[in-house]
Length: 532
Image (cartoon, rainbow, N blue to C red; front, side, top):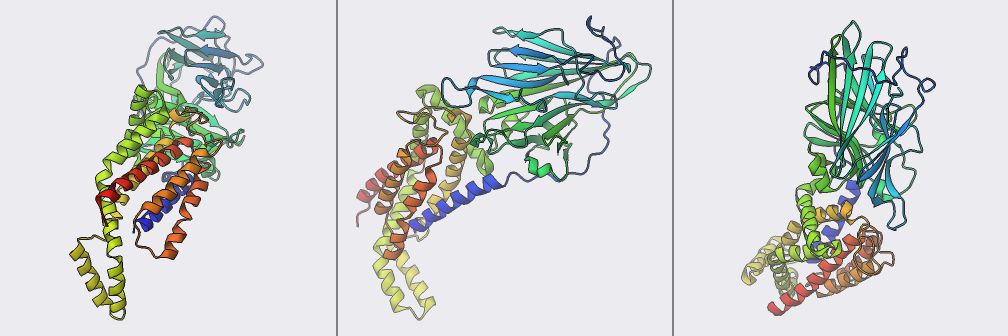
């Protein structure tokens, strides 16, 4: 019975893995975009801004010819960002604490792309007023540096010849990946302005670098208290629009994300589509506003561009940690991730932390496993008598079933006792699998000797092979009521699992290997307690 249960566990793992890769969360069916009206986002001011000294009013939209594009660098302790005056947008952001490969000389991780002018984050345009995301803003600085424990602002201005001014102010704080963004619209005309501000994010349809980091790359947003994920193939034929209680929206891959977070309901809707250049585009719209002559309106958002570290995401608020999609068993997986980080603080090695968690889980489930093995041992002992009963009542199925049940009662054996305890453990395994597979903490985290990256496969395949050997030993020690032919077929299972685990992250292989070793010791102990 245990062998059959093990097959079920193995198949369940395979099905869950394939399902999670192929299918994402249910996609929200949405109606086509519709005009929307909402109260102004913030209070208004009767004083329009004084134009910056270097601002020159122009007729219509500013152009690159009259006002060349400019790049401004922002340096903090966590990242170096390059902003563009085109759309007052973020062109690229280099993370100082993360590298593309696991080598001291490897390039730092860059989010956005300064090599492609179509990849811009938080470029601003508007509805109701003549403002495009290609508009060139003005900035009076070439770069800023955020000192330790300090805070700095970067301000962009656009003065339209049509009677309005737009000001974007980014606020950076040392030690934080979060960025505050305030977009102000000043009405210098004689007529009211009615419209909405839109922040536009673009993302490559296909990453230029093939890496498993991009396996889950796409659009993610938290709307109506649920996570919505889309890949570009989901919006090729038609755009998608979300407008219910949006907390945040952005693009993310396995380990990193860029997002805009709502501040006091500053996001009214999000439209996802494939733009004319072939890029994945997300248009985040504010509520509709009305600005009377001589008045202004301000829309405040919060931005996040950084790693999908559970603690860092949670610190941003707005349920941004929901972007770390851990599947069906998230309620178990996230506590396991917190536990993993807890032990790491004390031992300083994520591999050792995995071993500690494995031991704790094994001890927690020991009573169930003990009961399971006792049941299997009991079933093995009465197997000869069961064969006699089946032979004796082979022509009377009802009599055979009655005799077998009587035999179970006589020997106090539960035929399901070997399976149910294992079934209870399946959700925990799936949760731990997801935790280790998608945890940025394991990325480039060393264990010992040749294992220098717990998120990557074992380069020499040593641990998967040892895991397969321990699985074979475990099978030989496990009581079985299968016939000899079935037992021989089951011996192929360790070989299958070994090949499957060759490409798995070494952190996962480590968990399975340690679990097998503990199970072997557990079986040796139980075999001494349960005599034939």
